[in-house]
Length: 397
Ligand SMILES: Cc1cc2nc3c(=O)[nH]c(=O)nc-3n(C[C@H](O)[C@H](O)[C@H](O)COP(=O)(O)OP(=O)(O)OC[C@H]3O[C@@H](n4cnc5c(N)ncnc54)[C@H](O)[C@@H]3O)c2cc1C
Image (cartoon, rainbow, N blue to C red):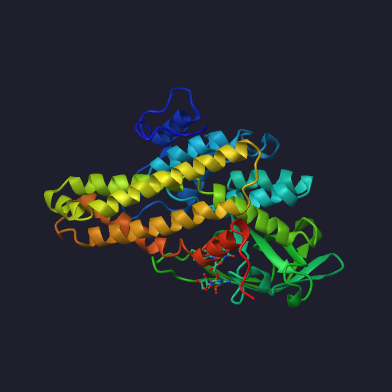
């Protein structure tokens, strides 16, 4: 059982453990520019974040479960969990290449050819290839099987035409994990194919969209007669849907495993920060019950993640249960973000720098939190999965 005692969690991890190694690495390498609990102007550049992520791999913080042959560390989900607890408890920035590590990498491992695995996987961990995910389209989000981007067979590969939207990080990516169809739209799940498309291919047009927090991460990506070699096809022409859905269910369960601990550290930051000034402490005390509920939510989430890790170690399938942590985390974290935003909005104008940093962090969490119940499958879609696949409820006739 991987259960952690809440009384000792956050205390110094056992010497020699993977958690101790991770904590020491973070303490030695997390600079002030990179910390999300500071609001330095300017903060870290994209290149600094990329270098930091490449260094994390050398330090053993990423690629933990990937086989050594593909550049990974060849360890288990237990070490992955230990590292992620420490990552979550620290104010580290979110990964630039999470799609490479958490989506493209597992898909390549599941359906890729041996030469693709040896070529593409180490480049993800070394940050030579940042990946984006080209699944959603203007008419296909929740209903992904409705996608219309076409891949037509040519003599030496595939000709791709269509449009993707909400493609996070496309303008800084070297590869796109593209889901396209070789047949007719009416074929739905059949004939969906996955490709590893080089983003510098002629005919790809990337347009950035500014989001509510001012970031320009989202993009629209247009494919106009883009030629993709057979060598960049992932799996067989009919395997796209099965591979995508299988990996998405594991993604919901294990990706960003640090989230529950990050949630805990955000609550701690809010509580400790407010306690530093009588005026902000008075505001905080008005939210005692809501704060207590958030802390309970964190414990429930951690317990759930740890139980899933135990199942994975026992070789059990996660399947639709991946929807539980995704749904619970996104809803609970959004409630926290709303409350935290209300609290920091009431901070006095002459607050000190530490409180201004806290305010900036909580505002950012509030704005980015709006999307948490949408990406990786909306709340309604998670509820639908649970109703259909766990409770086995049928649709009304
Ligand atoms: C921050 C962020 C990052 C993203 N990054 C990427 C990315 O990198 N790559 C990518 O491909 N996509 C990405 N997406 C897109 C994301 O996957 C879609 O937004 C999501 O799947 C919802 O699709 P949609 O926006 O088309 O909404 P729709 O599917 O149109 O849904 C609209 C509303 O209707 C509800 N609804 C839809 N169908 C049902 C149903 N059957 N039953 C009940 N309610 C339903 C939904 O829950 C939602 O509330 C990202 C989205 C966000 C917010």
